[in-house]
Length: 205
Image 1 (cartoon, rainbow, N blue to C red):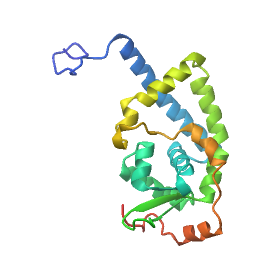
Image 2: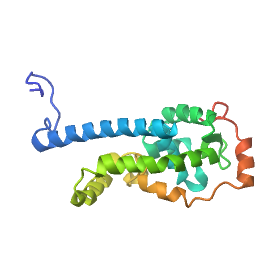
Image 3: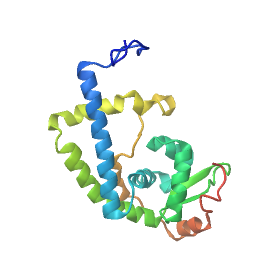
Image 4: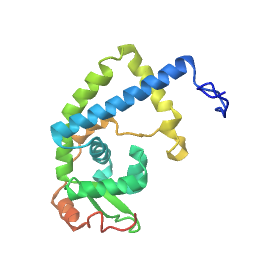
């Protein structure tokens, strides 16, 4: 029997019932609502979208503020094509740069610009305040640790990573603290960024 009472194929492990069903539906509602509220707050306060913010946060903690497109896609849990299209738009706004990798000219790297880093630093306080209020505000203190542990052990967090090691499907809010510690690009870095080709011209996608 299907979940609506009609005959039909069923999941191998059976339909979700009881606590599992309630937990799953509650999680989906919270996830969708949080994404909506975070995107709305970021757009209103800083002109960044939530996808913009995810990309900038990932780049801010990368070595040299740069990532290959495929690595960035795995880090934030997007399809590679989505990353390619989105960073093109961000490049046009001066938030990131795109250029061929110095280590491998067949691939394209995305780099964080000074404007992008400043936009992230300006947006971070309001974003974190919202997350603390909407997510942690209604979460009993004793559940924060177990929830974090469960999320990092979830197969969704490891299935896309080499060797099945825990990774980051979405940008870690804690990494925002590290953006302050990252050195700003020097003159040589800025000259290199100016020489890089924009995303729509770079190869290796």
